[in-house]
Each structure stands twice: as C-alpha cells, then as structure tokens.
Length: 259
Image (cartoon, rainbow, N blue to C red; front, top):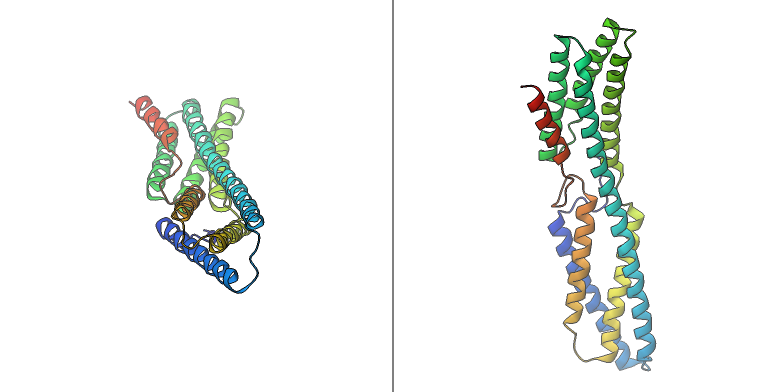
C-alpha cells in the first residue's frame, strides 16, 4: 500500500507530536520577540499583530482546504461501497435465470465474496488475493452460463453484473490506495502552521511579559483538526471509517432469499 507521509505515526502519536511541535514553535517565537524587544528598536505592535492575523487566516484557509479534500475522498469511498453492494444485489437477483445446479454454485461463490469483503473490512484489510480468486470463479461461472445459453439475453445481463462487481472492486482498491492527501499539501499545511505559531509567540514576546494560556488552546484546537483530517485520510485506520451497512443489508437479502 502506498502510504501517505504521516502514516508511519499512529493517530494519537501524530496528535501529540503536533502539540509538542506547536508549543516549541510558540516558545521559539516568544524568545525571539523578547530578545528583539530588549536589544533592538521596538517594532510597531499593530503591524506585527496584523501580519500574525494574516498568517492565521492563511492557516485557516489551508486547514479548510485540506479538510474538504479529505472529506471528499471519504465520500468517494462511501459511495463506492454503496455501488458495490447494489452491484452484488443485482448480480444475485439476476442469477435466478441460471438453471440449477449452476445457480446454487454461482450464488455460493457470490456469497463467499460478500463474506470475504465484510470480514476484510472488519480487519481493515483489502482482501486482494481472496477477491481475485473469487472473481475468477465468478467469471468462470458466468462464462459457463453463457456457453450453455449463448443466445440468451438474460445470461448476458448476468455477465454484465459480474463485470460491474469486478470493476467496482478495482475502483474501490484504487480509491483506497491512491485517494490520499498529497505530500505537498501536508508540507504546505505544516509550513504555514509553523509560521503562524512562531508569529504568535513573537508577538507575545514583543507585547507581554508572560505567555498567554490561550495559545495552548489554539494549539490544541489545531492539533484536533489535524487529527480529524488524518483520520479521514486513513481508510484502514482510525475511528472514522466507511460504513459497511449496505453490504450487511445485502447479506440479509441473500439470507432471506436462500431460505
């Protein structure tokens, strides 16, 4: 799997590291501002405050853009699960046109594929090998149905459904592997955040004799947003995961119709 640049850190470690780095940057800016206030001509506080506010605005924009991108990728993964569940349901219903005993064999393979999907989703895996093997069996059964009734339009509909199931699986794998926040966006986000934290500390060093506790709240809020963005960006890790309820509903349908 192609990991994003921050995947080597667990989410909790990423959050703690972001807090620690933010505090260090504010402290560095504070000491720099305090040193400048002592040794050089004092700067205009209003101009420093305006530049700090502008940097915070840029940081807010970068956070909003990155969050929107992560949320968009999450929505894409969720939509694919719904489409794949619908494709499996359609394939199962169209298999009624296949005569026995091939129908039971085909439905058994399709049910095995569905179970493999749900089991892998619970474990946070992609079930690549198992899915490829089951796809080959599904396709072989569909081809056999066409060979038995080559002129039947109903069996061609079944082949079309099987092909859609396989295509959606490939699309889901591709989305999981590649729909991630690019390195350049993460780097830019943290660069802007670093400038903002240093600027806040610098302004405090120029204007006050002690550090404001409000800065800690700001860093915690920033770290919380980073945590949420990272959670959305990790398809197989974290607390925000794509719901597999559409696949569970299809399994219930298969159970009801097989009785």
